[in-house]
Length: 191
Image (cartoon, rainbow, N blue to C red):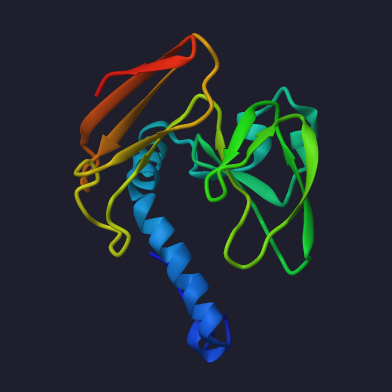
């Protein structure tokens, strides 16, 4: 559930301007389409105790640069989200992997800092390499049949790497599994 309120004042986008409403709609639609991934991560958190939102050092303990990162985090096992505040340009570090920005499609090599500029319609939301990201067809509701019409987005895969994805129903039961293995320049996925 998303909440639109402040601690002591009424804060809703339509009190600001039309662009605030448009931006909110874009990100709510994205959240709804990501529900197969998000709910799958919630099921994993329940089963294994690993939080959905977690500091970078939890997933990358060998990368010392991640020890002090406080403006970006892992959003489940496959997405890196960086906070984007009022500054027109932000420095983000991407840990040692290859990452693809889910919104722009741009690829970034890990192990370096990037100074990036975003407007209100985008953000640093990076997909980790060797990931199958399930994206639902419903962009208006958070609860729907996640496997029905799901699109499986493949991030950058290294040769010989494997990944799989499990998609739960709204009760947490796995209803779809899909493995993938990269072979040469082609991928071979079984649904």
